Image (cartoon, rainbow, N blue to C red):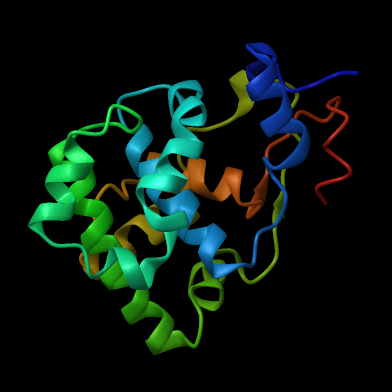
Length: 186
């Protein structure tokens, strides 16, 4: 079974690649989870975040934005002491802020899904990558998404993070054309 090159590092990466990466996501809770996890990855490897993902789900109330938006200083201090997540003060604070802004976007657009998918016209962009070296770090769409999220006050939403987010949530199909998931994710 042929996979994208990056997915062959560990069984956890293989499982994630084979079941989630590139599958179009329209569930607001899952879209929020990926927004937070991609921001947490900044400066780290995706493998590191995957290993901590279940801990993140526990620590951050299964990515319930309503609950996270209410976190106070005591809860933030508890999170910063949790070795199961990335204990970066800026990233933890950004999670709380981003939860509040996520809720505002939901209110404005009716759903975060409607808002975020507008950057790709509501349908996945299907690429035809031959290998990982053909995949850009960012695109015009991720630039636009990053700019709009930042204008709204979101943190850890640079264009490269946004492009990784778009890949993870199926807004773009960047599976190698020879990968067994390429046609499945269209």
